[in-house]
Length: 117
Image (cartoon, rainbow, N blue to C red):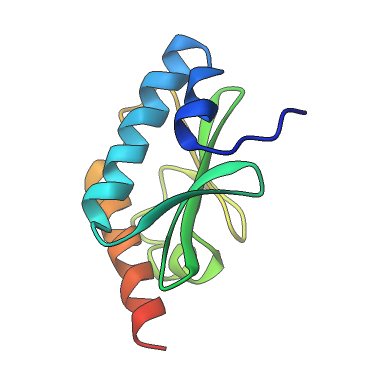
């Protein structure tokens, strides 16, 4: 498996549809955490603040994986009923529009969580 150094490099290797969805997700991350720093962590695009990763994302077969850690998934569980979730993952099917408002809320929640610890 190729090791990525930058998000641009990561996105360049994706098929067109996954690249488009991932670029939108990247922009949502940047919008919700303007003071965040883009990074590659666990070979996935991520954003961090104060040295801590806020969330990751990665395209998979049939869905975009959004990894905001377990606590926000529990906190937002009522808003996530239309999505398959696991302890740390929200699976967003490609046949649905990205839930931009919810993604922003979860990222903002994670920023507050990190900055207030």
